Amino acid sequence: MTRRAVVPSGGPDDSRAGRLRAKGRRAIVGLFERDRLFLAALLTLAAVIRLVGLPGRGDFDGDQGHDMLTLLRFVRDGQVPLLGPPTSIGDFHHGAAYYFLLAPAAWLSGSDPVAILAVIAAFGTAAVGVTWWLARAVGGRVAGLIAGLLLAVSPAAVEQSTFLWNPNPIPFFASVALAAAWHARTSGRARWWAVAVASAGMVLQLHVLGIVFLPPIIALGVAEAVRASRTGDAGRARRAIAGMAAGMAVIALLFVPLLAHELQTGFEETGRFVAFFAGRAGGDSVGTLDPLQRLVFTAFRIVGWPLVGLVTSAPFAAIVSVSSALVLGLWIMVAGRGEERTVARWLGLTIAWSTVALAVLAPSLQTVVAGLPNDHYHAFLDPVVIVLMALALRALGAGSGLQVTADRAARVVVAGAIVALVGVAIGRWPPLTQANGGWPNARDAGARIVALAPGGTFDVRGLPIFKTAEGIGYPIVAAGGSAVIATDVETSKRPITAGATLVIVCDRLFEEVIGDPCGGPAESRFLGRIPGLGTGPAAPVLVDRFDASPRTSVSVYRP
Image (cartoon, rainbow, N blue to C red):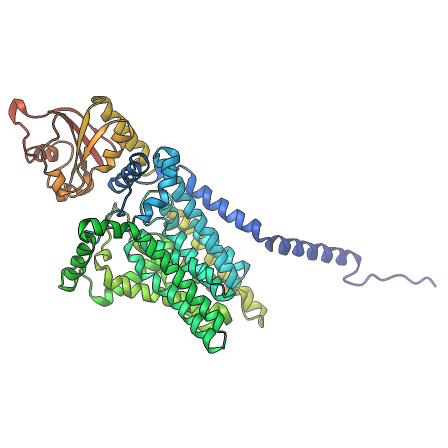
């Protein structure tokens, strides 16, 4: 009797399919383990998002004109800047290191704003890579991928990478400080403590409120030195202290230009700084919120900024994102394991400390001004929020490993949350062309003005008079003109430069403050207040009036 072979379930065909599935899984896992490939993809994504349409993507106004003029005078005329850009919270300045940071690009490009913008975009792109590294070092590849992706598409990070302003390189130096501090803690090497503290010092140079970021970095180093001493590792403790001391020495070096200025002016800047905070102590502060409201609003803006951008522009998305981020952050701080929990607590306490400090030090910043840059003053917390979110999402998606159904549900929730965050971020990106045309519009305005009086001198004034006119002053200089530019109330009131062509730049955003509309009435009233100008037949003659942008009206007069 012939016996028939029976092919059981799971026979050759099924085994072949199983082997193919297993091979596919191994290929995916192998691909995922290629860190360099994923890092390159994240950096490419970040660079493309930031570089597309770069010349006209960001605003070019008074602050940008001031910075470009300072860089031009530095690299062309040898006028070394001892002070940084003026602050918006007092009559003092940020650090001069900002200009030294951008000076090489200005020198190589002939002070071309597009080249400077490319450097700002490069810092924003590099911040993605450093943030990826920190999250990966603590939470593994998945956490690194989440953190890198969220910062690459962050609307705040994209905006900060596409226009010229002193706070915009802050996320890069903050992420370097955080990553170096954590690497110093795990490796025990002094040089990484030096890098961490010095990078925090650059954050302070870029914005005076960066002083808030330095204590968390120092605190981690002190905690590491104490821990090493208690475990009998005196060498490790000494290295931590020596490294932090070296970092503080670098910070002191960064303040040498300020010291030179103070010695020349009888400590003028220090006096202004003290006067500002003395006025604050005497009750001369701006803001209508009570202390608790300030804390809540500050925390809301800090956490929401890297996720959705300016929270008042997208309140619903901000409420959902911030609420989820706070819940996830508190959860990972409590339920995290090992080093992941340590980092989560460090980052969470950094956010808490910064919220309190910023609410106290800068109550005027509780006010959101439509049409002007907002929230960049706490950009050093962007990588803190992003890494904390990435660690929490990775831990939630990892599950307990005990209940398959629950773990799969958790992964679905995490995947959905990441897709939602990315979708909201993309929807909140700044437009490819700034509403006011950015540098191309300003450049064309400068060329048009210079063409009216080639070889002449231009006396450039701004309305309102407390706003610098350098946003049009620099384009005039870049077009080959010679310009005397009003930068504040006092210089706006001086007599006209002899023989100069008068240029009045009127900002429609401030028409309510000016008291008259731009494009005629505001300029006419302002002409009557300039000393020495004639009236009647001797009055200056209007030779051109045009809109440099939807917001900016330019009027040109010959005396």
